[in-house]
Image: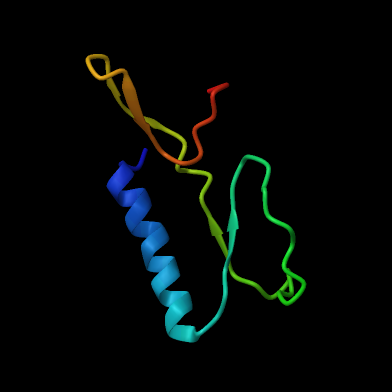
Length: 77
């Protein structure tokens, strides 16, 4: 299992590589997307960056009644 930092580093490397090539990317995740499809992107040619590994609870702070979670963690999880 990858650490949070490793997962974030992996996504950052993919974004940097795409930026060097001057291409747009599409994010892929487990949950439903809230974005309208971009008519200017060809889904077959657009590089995809998978965010689905970002699904862990990182910290629960009982004193301050907060938690820190990765973006893919759902309330159901």
